[in-house]
Image 1 (cartoon, rainbow, N blue to C red):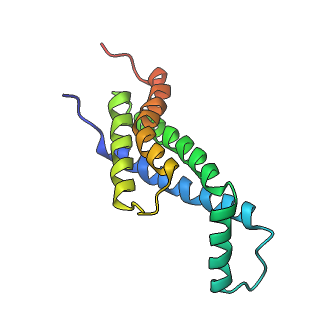
Image 2 (image 1 turned 30 degrees about the vertical axis):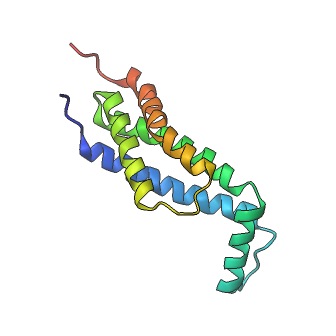
Length: 138
């Protein structure tokens, strides 16, 4: 059985989480720019957040961007490990599913379930792109 480079998977996963957080904040402010003002109260910010989540295409947009970062996470894990890319993509997808289930929200909607189903294939797909950059096995 090939050995997984857990350090590569951990680095790639943290990078993916960081990218997701940054992207989510940027997209939120793009969607909420008409509702935000200087000195906004926390209560008003919570109302804006609820409005954005319920009345815009924010969540589907975040879903698509999240899938892109999942592909990139699988790619990064495989590139950092420099060997057995598909196993590292599988490891990234597995870590992503465990993390998602640990934070699972009972108010999940259809794309949350689709995201769970697509996490491992997306991570392996990203690792596939790293394959040409791997040293040839002898």
